[in-house]
Amino acid sequence: MDTSSVGIVSPRVEHFDTPLRFATGSELPAYDLIFETYGELNAAGSNAVLICHALSGHHHAAGRHSEDERKTGWWDVCIGPGKPIDTNRFFVVSLNNLGGCHGSTGPTSINPATGEVWGPEFPQPQVEDWVDAQARLADRLGIDCWAAVIGGSLGGMQAMTWSLRYPDRVRHCVAIAAALKLSAQNIAFNEIARRAIISDPGWCDGHYLRENTLPAQGLALARMVGHITYLSDNAMASRFGRELQASEGDEDEDGRREFQVESYLRYQGARFSTVFDANTYVLMTRALDHFDLGGPGADPVDAFRRSQCDYLVLSFSTDWRFSPARSREIVDALLAAERPVSYAEIVADEGHDAFLLPIPRYLAVLDAYLQRVVT
Amino acid sequence: MRQDLTHILRWIRPGARVLDLGCGNGEFLALLRAQRDAVVTGIEIDPDAITAAIARGLSIIEQDLDSPLQNFPDQSYDMVVMAHALQAVHYPDQVLEEMLRIGRECVVTFPNFGHWRCRLHLATRGRMPVSKFMPYSWYDTPNIHFCTVRDFETLCRQRGIRILGRDMIGGEGGQSKLARQWPNLFATTAIYHISR
Image (cartoon, rainbow over all chains, first blue to last red; front, top):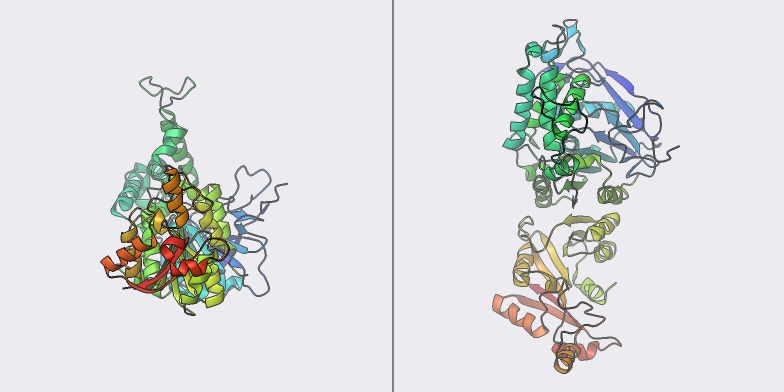
């Protein structure tokens, strides 16, 4: 048995029937949040750690749902007994955000007002709305103040938003491979992904479930574009190079054998299109695009002055989606706001994806930082 | 704890905001926090030292002292410390200027290349000194800008840097009295408390 695993885990669902008003003004009358927990909440409720997921993430962050589940949760390298987010010390909560497609209320849920699936009518959440929903889950679980809120990429943006929106409810904020806001280049890539989905004849203005179609091609293309931005040039070179597919029968329509990278991307795209909802993808990328720490056009230094927690900021050398320069902007704003912050730039070849991978220095720094979190 | 660091301690007021450039594993910052209740930040470049310093519960920024320090606002620290790093940066004078911009006061410590052993080594053997104190060969050393006590004070004079205090550490066996009397000849380590 793997003693560093949280083992077999089961998700739970909490139902909320107090309406949640989104930043955009629309309101969600009632909703479910699906989540998993690892470790035990102590009597004082002081050892709780919130994990915030990235663009296509979900609540299943560690362990397995059954003995025969092939893959572990998406952040199993960091969460477990003796791992940096040590479940012997911490009570870890990981949820699927509103608008998701893994069990929390989202575009594939039924709109009680119409009796039909929400589809494209699901209200557009912003990062702060997710944080508000997470705060209600914390209330429900009896957690007044998180020992730490931790996230990578879009998850890091949620963690930082926590520290501003509920400054007295967070003691430590860990933002990994994140940014204060998206660049034009980031938004451009997201727009290509959305265009791919929306241009698919199966999209049907987002009503594909009602119409019994699926924009599978578009969603696959969206994932392929996204995937390229998660990897570094080096990572792709060393993984695929210019190698051709080995087996015969892989020729394209003109009889050419294809590059391994083509086949890989197509496989990733096709697989993703069967497990992810297109409306969720559109909604999550829009939330990401509009994220601007502290509110649209806000000065991040002023924003961070409201915070009361300590920060750890981490970046990866070959990440070009949210590069080390973006993380240094976070650090510089924190320094200017005179907030306690630690920063490390991890040398890693894997690009943005590095935040999900067992890179020794990354795990060591995260572990070293979390030692200080009093439980 | 290196001797120069315990000497610096008395210049740090309780509760001061202190920035340590090249803080290593954070031993000195941890001491400042414990004994002076100081609010401390360290800058370091060595990965293992950063991890060790973060494990002490300190706020550590991974940053190269040879890159601009513009991300630290003017006069944002009570004290900026740089211990035994001046000789390892590309442009020591520019780093000094940056320290004085960021901190109201600064402390700099460096090995004194004017020490008689260095002079003797160079004079008699005609080769760059390698000793327990300066253990590197000239072609493979982090120490690229050695200076003497007199060099440093000349630079301070030229740049209008005020020397608020200085202290000298001699070699083994408590030669600090000699070192204070004739620092350029007998000090192994020079410690300067400076401001604008």
